[in-house]
Structure formats: structure tokens, C-alpha cells
Length: 510
Image (cartoon, rainbow, N blue to C red; front, side, top):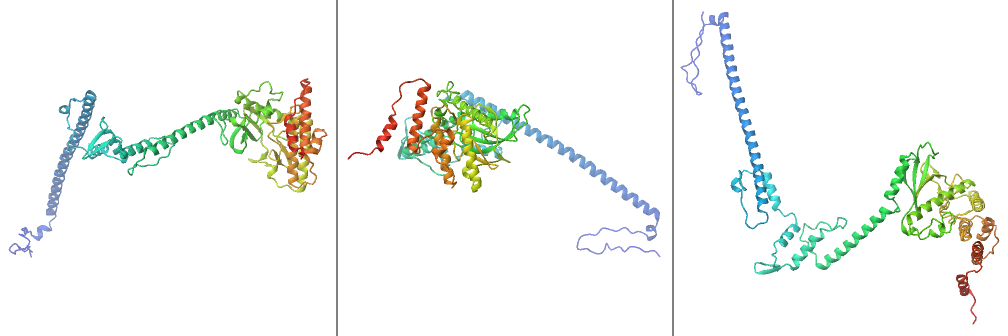
């Protein structure tokens, strides 16, 4: 029985006219030949659709490429036109200069000055030129707008160049032009005004401060400051490192009135036996330190012919050389002191008294047991005697500040001012050393501490009175007589100072 598809074209659809369906026999549908024909028709339709779409895409790609090339060409042409206009504008400004009559090249430009198509960035740049960032910009413009006659009419008021408000703003602008070291702050956020009196005071102070800074800068370039070194000293240290005498320069160990001491690691120089740790003593070259040094060096026969107050730099070199010679002499007679490594001008490299970057403590900073205190006293007095008798030297500045306590032994340091026994004031310096040592050990409670006069006798072998004032006078008389005999002088100088002091303490007759 044949089945047919019902034709429903007669039924009315609310969505429109339905597509008419072709009536097909069921046997035809089941036929294999019909199925193959339908498959071929479907493939042919799909291939035609794909071909049409590909042709359309190729056309669109070609059109888009042409449009992109056109846009790029337009952009390049626009950029070229702008650069050409800038060149024409600069030529116009150069040609016109400051002339009151100007020539315009506007007709030669591609883009006019106020073209609507300018970018936002260009408009922002133009706005920036006319923007007033703070009050100082507007103040400067107000001054520039003042005519040469010195006054202008502002509405019903007459404004002159001496106006208080304008002068105050101008002073504020000038203050902002002070050197960077002069901290003025930022006053552009408000209407800052300074009177002439305030401005003049600040100007004078700025000049004085600048002069002071220049003086300090010059002095720091020529001298060794308290916590730093000058360029010449740094160059010497660099040379020591390059010569492998030092491996590295570390921090500051101590600072004194005449020198700065640095810690350094010893190098591997083949010609010298450099210790593992070194102390670098850099003598200060500031002029105020030379005032008290001449009395220790000008009468020393080793430097007497070379001494001159006219050249402070040479004095400091002799001062360092003197300490080196004194340390070498002390070491030869067995006195515990730093060992000299090398001397370069005013830089003295010595062995480090301490261990692992930690320096030995000064005698004044150590809390000694009674047995250690007694041993320290014995060592100090013995080294003083050995220094005077064997090394033929007087320390001249011996105290608990210049004695180190390391490995239960006393070490003498800072011997740059040490003088020879034949120095005119050697005994005075020795008495001062004895007084300092005796006072320290007495304060620490050592029961066997001798008086300054007794210690002086033990060290020097001279018998002098017990009274301190008489002892000093006797020493001065002895030194004066020694000086007269040395230079074969027959007349003695009248001891005016001594007689004057004696007259003050003499009893008055009522």
C-alpha cells in the first residue's frame, strides 16, 4: 500500500504561508539510487557556498589592506606637514626677531595655528605654556607687565613698582633663588610676601652661610678632619692597598686631638713582614693643632735644622717621622709598644694591639684586680726607667690614656711628643709623667704607689726636694744651668717668673 504525505497547504498558519512540501513515494525514499542523488546535490550545494564565501573574504581582505595603506600614508603626510610648518614657524621667528613690524608666513603653512583637528596632547602642551603653576609665576608676570615708566593704572588705582604687595611678592621670588643649601621651603601654594627688611636679613645670612661653607670645604680639602680624611690621605691609603701592604681599610678605632686611628687588615707584600691586623695613625693637618707641637720638636736635635713654622705640612710630616723613630728606639730596648710597618708622609702604619678587630683597652678603662694593679704599676715604672735610661727618651705625655692593658701587660703608645734626655725641658716633662702615673695608681688604691718626687728619683736618679713647687723650680734651675754650660754662656737669665710667684706667697709685714 502506498503511503502519501498529507498536503496541509490548505490550512492557514498564523506565522505566514508554509512552504509547499513535495509529495514523494515511500518506495522512492527507500531507493538507494535516490539517496545517492540527494547526497550529491547536498555536497554540490555546500561546495558552492564555501567557494562564494572564500571569494567574498578575499575581496574584504584586499579592501582592508588598501584602507590600512591609505591611513598610513595619510598619517605620514600629516606628520611631514607638521614638521614643515614647525620649520616655517621657526624661520618666521628668526626673521622677525624683536622687530615691531613682523612678517607672517601663515599662507605657506599647511595647518593653521588653530586647527580643529589637533590632538589632545598638543592642546595640553599649549595649555601648559600658559598655565600658572604657583603664585610666583603670576608675580613674575606682574613685574614683567610693569611699564618702563614705573607705574600703571589698574582700574581707578595707580600701581607703582614700589607697591608693598608687589615688592613683597618679588622678595619672595628672590628668596626662592637662594642656593640649595639654604632651606626656604615651598611657598608657591599661597600668596607669599616678604618685607624688604626680612629679605635683606635673609640675604645677608645666606651670604655668610655660603662663605662659611666655602671655608669649611676648602679646609676639608686641605686638612684631615676629625672623622674623615682628605683626598691626599685617601690617595696614600689607596697606594698602600695597591702595594699589598694593606688588604683592606676598616673603620675608625679612636679619634684624638692630634690624630685619627683606623683599623686595617694586613696585606701579603713579599718585601715586608706585615702583621695580620694593623693600626693606621693619620695625623691631623688642621692648623689649630700646630700651636702646641713646636715645643716638642723645635729643640730636638734630630729635627732642629728642618723645623720651620712657615710650612705646617712639613711639620706634620716631621711629627709622624718622630713617632716612628721613637717607636723603633723603644722596641730595640725591649719596651712593649706597637711595631712600625711603614711611614708615608703623615700616615703611620703600625701593628695592632688587640685581637679580632677589637683594640686593647686603655688603662683607665680597665677594672684591675689588686694583683693585676700591682703588676701594672711595676711594669709601668720599669718601662719608664728603661725609656729614660736605655732609650734616652722621655714620653712627655704619659698617663692612663696612653697605656694599653693587653694580655696582662702594659703597652706604651702615642710617643710622637717624646723628647730626648738632652732636651731643655726633658726633666719638666718627666716630672709631669711621674705625677700623672702616681696620681692614677693612688686613685685606684694601690698601697705601694710612690710620690711623684720619689718616682722621679727612681727614674732619673736625681735627688730633689719633696715639695712639688720647690721640686719644679729646682728642675728648671738644673735645666737652665745645663743649657748655659752646653752653650758656654757665662750670664744666667734672671728668673723673673719664679721670683714673682715667690713674692706673692711671701708673708706681708703689717
